[in-house]
Image (cartoon, rainbow, N blue to C red; front, side, top):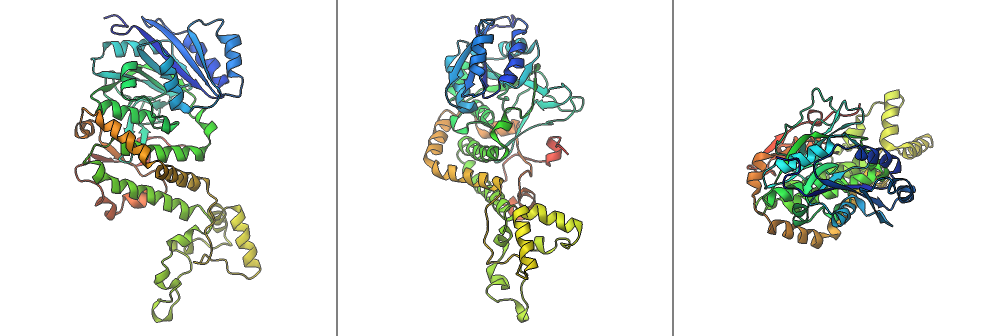
Length: 451
């Protein structure tokens, strides 16, 4: 079978936002690709960049590389809408999505084309392998989906020698949006990337929709790209990404779980979101510890037995090391934040009360908490919009979640503030459906964390 059997032309789609320095490497590597056996084009979206990307491409790239086409947007459309724009412009009957901060190996495109061409007709997409810039550690080979719509790159950052890399043709729950080849017709029929996501988890959502629509996704590990991990995403800011992760995860779960399962799983999802929000508020904002006080346990309502006074601070803060020790100083400096730490110190020197009490107001200062609250605000403000998306996704369902989850069980991995306490509680277990295939793992078991 020829490399391009069943395929006429492929379009490589690259979205770039203020990433000219990355494009220089990425486009040079694309210019050196081995012949994939079919015609191909390269579409680059300048996504509202302010670094001169479009001018550089018109002057330096387009005159020398006839395969390259520039599509310019005056504003940043986001990863999802940006790629949808390129798919609309694409002349190929399959589209390869590639991050701009990557360096594809010479045989990358040929391997993707060969894998999709050789696959059965029900295979909508193939997913390549992503490694770090030096080629020593894994970035993406296989994804894991959690019960609440989040996802992980299995063995992220682990040395390739020990990482669990999927075999050629192995089924995957989703293809990574930074290195995948998808049939254009399948992508469009499934609705493309959900533009409400802006970025992150859009590939997880698309993968679930392709599977529920009756199609499949396979691995093509010979299609390798090197990735500068987070080089582009860092431009969004750490805490803004938190907003995207939590909002998009909830949307993924809400839209894709089938009727009957969604209604039984929804309480556990909502409890998880509430737990994370409460943990962030209580643990990362001055005065937040007062949220754990029970006003009818003796502190305010004077209900303590035998005239005893109730603690004025929750045990977590009451049991801190003494303030005069280095450990005590360090914990309080990190926990309260510099401004609140100094304010408390000044009050203590002046003889004022410094311990937390029900009368001390909560001061919202932590950016992670703000991002979490913004995610909740977006969801509450877009209930009808999300419901319409769910209706559309479920209307095209041809495969049950029972069949999908038999292949890809959902994971429970404590990751965010509050998760460890919640997930280990007996009470939480009663909120999970008994028939939900669930794999319990720690974060260290699924990925290599930076120390």
